[in-house]
Image (tube, rainbow, N blue to C red; front, side, top):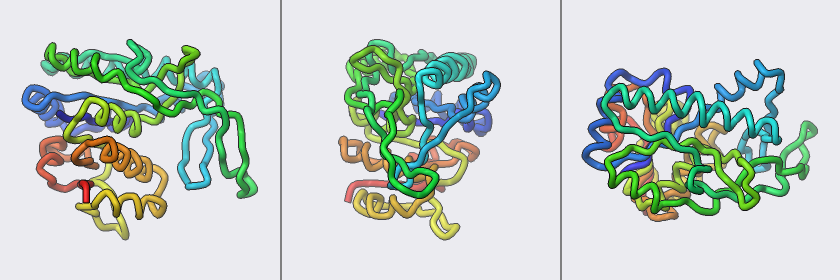
Length: 267
């Protein structure tokens, strides 16, 4: 079984062979899709006159700051427009997909972060209100497994629910890692717009879990989250994490075959 994370912006630029690839993997291995859509959220925020705000953690991780209004826009765009567009696209190509949010049946539960430690404009550490960002605590793996047994392909948007029933924004890459780990997937695959982790303009084809943890602080913001999510997935029992280019032909099958991608495995 495999969990795939697809970025919202990647969906529009997938190789034409990808849908056939998804169908093949869904029918032979069992497939769960977690998707993002941050760029579309930023676009809609600007259209609505809500200026997006981003913060950087002391370890260099850049993320969206989510206040209540942003959480509502995030939910509307990610769980509405993007999720249903992906489901429609899959259904059109013979893949019996079902669109879900992390809120449905508590598929993704999270704890609201009370404070966030960030680096402010002066380059100093500063604690700010946590807003509506969540730390994932639990995944309803039983429901996901039930849907898979029914021959359905779950398509999950990374909106979590808290004990207080708030909508919480959780990182899509890490949501995919938690889903993969909780369901007991063999693999987690992060589909992006590059071949994998590039260091000194060269593709890193293989990393052990220990090596991935060691080099993570030296990596740029976008890929850093994928490496972090990969290590979290492996720590939860997933056998291997893959980072691959969605613009290549048959990107899923190619990644599973360890062709033109980054593979992270246990030591």
